[in-house]
Image 1 (cartoon, rainbow, N blue to C red):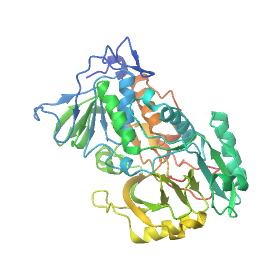
Image 2: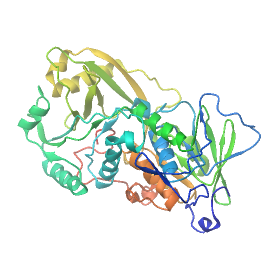
Image 3: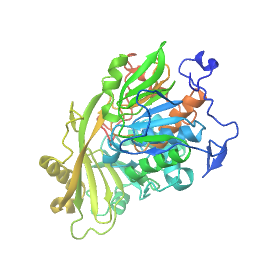
Image 4: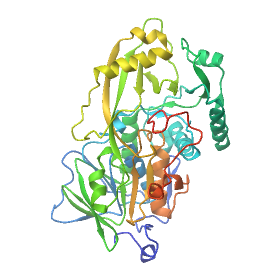
Length: 447
């Protein structure tokens, strides 16, 4: 097998790669493969010139050119996997990544996701040195607002995050008013403040990961669609595409809302449902001149952040389920614009008459419990997956990519324990439930 030792065959799902240099070198603060003589190319549009009748080979094939796929490609190369091949059916960041609000915040109502976010923040803060390029990170601060009755849960979550090392604290209503001028605060039960969080540019982040991976030897190919994951002798053997087969002993599946067609032939059903979600942008009204922080408002089930220098971007839960990702409308619905204005002005009354400047819709894949599946699929050795992100994996994508790469190279994730994200939890009858949530399960971005 390409890149898999006989020893790895005795450990299902764990591959060791002949392409890993025994003498890694340092590049921009990370360990990279090297002596540095890489021959891979970045393929756009029509793809590479190869004989479609001949199978290509790779150590790892990554399916999906969003931020999770490109992060995984970069981290694989950083760990020394030289013959990785990322394929994307359209263009980089064509799915949920390119439509993301791109919040970068640590506040979750569970420890595993906060740990992923915390490890990822370390990358966002030092992106140029760790990855290269510019991710557009804006550390303008983050406010988590919760309704009355959830003050104790908020405090437990804050304490849990502080133990991890996250810079967060509870703030009073007066402090909320200072951080978010012009806001209504009477209906807020409690709030958490993260001064070092903010938002980033989702397209720039995915592009930078891809370019860094390419420089380290990864083949990045757009306009090539995976049609089937091939198994032989009980494990992954290849990926069939519309431009021929790629033989590989390991596959990372990060397809966003477009993955069910690849899961079905393998007999994998996790109850994933594609959802169409929307975002709306409002121009600041007269009198608003200061950029506000990123806000998740659990009282009004919404989230918002600055967009540019004079606008605010807002999303409201949850979206329309069972939408066909091949046929969805990418525009914003008029009734959704009205809903966003209602929710935004409920917190910031000055926005009641704000002008709508634009909006869009994108597709996410929801899992039954609203949490991602990140796993080496036990029934398909060699298949690694990031599925059902439920609209909240941009901020955790640096750590997710790192963990998947560690799993492939080292046999298990080292950065964060991913047990909670296991694919078998549904069959076990143990869907994810956060005891310290804020009153609604299965929220997307704002949970």
